[in-house]
Image 1 (cartoon, helix red, strand yellow):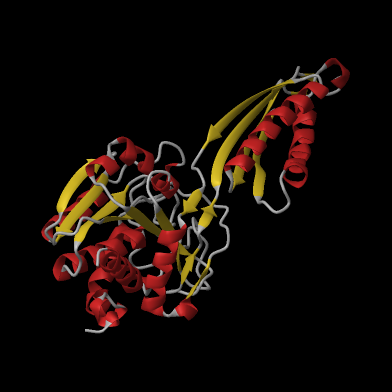
Image 2 (cartoon, helix red, strand yellow):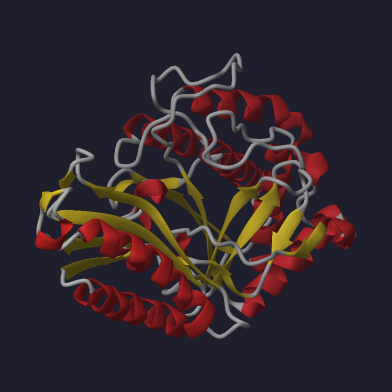
Length: 392
């Protein structure tokens, strides 16, 4: 048997394509938000149990973990797919569009779950590996804080289901469907949220000299904050500070007592993340006090940086190149979005991959987004071949 035929190929999954389409379209039509994935988890668990997996339900909430041991090998691998949807009203007009008002799979998690289910069915049927595979179906990736990854880890994920390495993926709009993008080291940003409250002294708009105007201070702060990236961050590094909202007052003839700002802060290195927080706090205090006001900064640390280990990333790259050819595998650019897969990588070596969703794909979190169905057999084949090669 040749090396190519010894491991899973895309052609092995062509007979399963209609089955995978049916699964993906069902999941797309029945989206559930973070922390609400009970029916999705039940659907996934029942399929896995039917294929002979040892299935644990309610891991860290609605999480499902399926384990299958074959042979006497001592190595183990974990592969993760996310299951939750977003609070967005769908506008695709698809025959399988969301049946849940105000909820949709606008990030492709329905596709991620389906691809891993496709691999699960294949691996259970063929059993061409020697060791243990753990398939993780994770809830609440979109939560932002207190996410599903954190909850599953706190519930003893890696103690209950040991693994030597962990892998995950996300679809990638703007890259050809079926192509793979990979990167060792930092890949996706840490995402922090900051709420700033500036307190002044309100009064009549015609008598500003008798007030301390928090609106003026807030506006100056918005401009001043932009200097942090340009003047405090190494030009060879990347960071983003976005003031996403600013609120103050209700009437044009009243100077309010307070003004509030909400910031999204992105970074790719722990040192840069620390610099950003330090400078935001100090600059906020200085600007507010310079206007005679005071400021309170509530700094919420979100998902950390997704840092892929080199060995596992290069292994995944070699598997992808075997599967789809070197021309369809490339190095991914840094992505300022965030992912709670980062928490898994803080505990285990592994790699988070990107799978092209089509050059004309709608952007993620768009009301018109849809997962590229031609990717279903590609993703299922990649996970199967990766498992077989890792546990060969």
